[in-house]
Image (cartoon, rainbow, N blue to C red):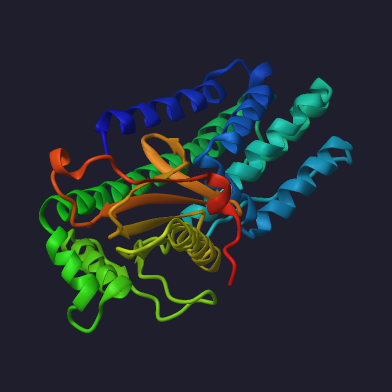
Length: 340
């Protein structure tokens, strides 16, 4: 993956958060609202927001209670002090706090100040002396907490995609014949899709990444599950398109792959996964996918599935191959459920 693309992604992310972190106090609720709207409509980051939003944490109930009671001005509140057992729970809390601050945009000034002061006290355990002082923890803890989580997740995604891209290049440049043998004849007990998936596992293992292969999930067995020290899973699955595949077979195979990865992500409660397809068919396959930050992906059921094709067909040189047989598959065909 182009380092300049990664740098651009992080620059835009930083710029979007900077306004909420530095704007004048009167504009803070509006800036929070604009930030959340951007995140929820971003083609890639929306899945991370959805994951945090759906994470069951007790703090969400307390935050909603603080906003409701402070808005009604029901005397002196005791908002308490939050707790989070993991980095992800902390990020989810920060998202709920920022969303609560955004909701104050329609409130009267004195009510807004009272709500923000109680939210700040919930974050720090200390009562702020004035509304302006309350904004400091809301910016430094809540808004910055979302940014740090998003930045870290982008970095993880880019690292995994870069490793898969290196695998694609190595396979297409140096290992095509070997992978065809694995697909046709098998190696170490596996051939076809399973044998090719083992080759992918071997390569990832050689990159000094710890991974596990889960025995089963409720949707079956994914080919590769990476687990980070923090407990998060990364789902990678493989599909094989054989040499004699027709357009309908290609569509069904790859479409089924996208849906399988989406189901695995649901099982492991992850917002995104990766699909690697090994193309043996001597066709130029063009998928009408979305693209962001140099990554191709398809959104299914709130999950983002990144796609990478590894071409292992026995193709003649460009001067002898003639016009390529092109297969174009629309995004709607891939996103539609595949018939059983």
